Image (cartoon, rainbow, N blue to C red):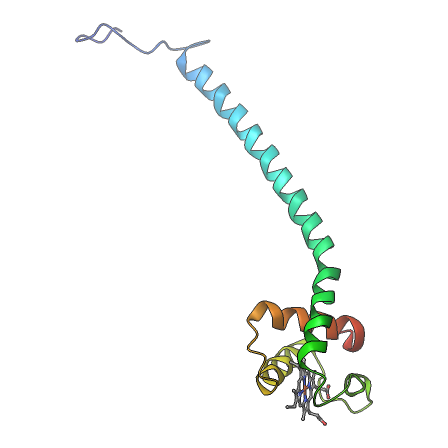
Length: 122
Ligand code: HEC
């Protein structure tokens, strides 16, 4: 049925506006999925490639600020006080204050990574 005022109506049925529109949506969805896949791959590559670098950063930070009061022997002694990752995070935070390092969370994370990978191994 035609619209009375402008004489235009949307074509219906096969090959009409609605079908073509639906096809377009499917194409868009496909495209979005491809982009998502790319983002996932990039994120994975970053996640794997950045962890050794972070530990290196942590080592440099540790050597810069943390060697004044104790050596790394403290982390491997039998009666060490840190028993899990949460306590390690807290300890590094507290000690970074003692070391007057003024580190933001990312630097604390780097040092925690370094200590955990090389000494604690939780
Ligand atoms: C002002 C001195 C001082 C500085 C600087 C310092 N620490 Fe400590 N740290 C201590 C003391 C004291 C202890 C407790 C030692 C003990 O339990 O015998 C300790 C213990 C620790 C432990 C726990 C060891 C265990 O028993 O498992 C960690 C981890 C640690 N420090 C990390 C750091 C890091 C990382 C830095 C650099 C941000 C740092 N410390 C700088 C004084 C310091």
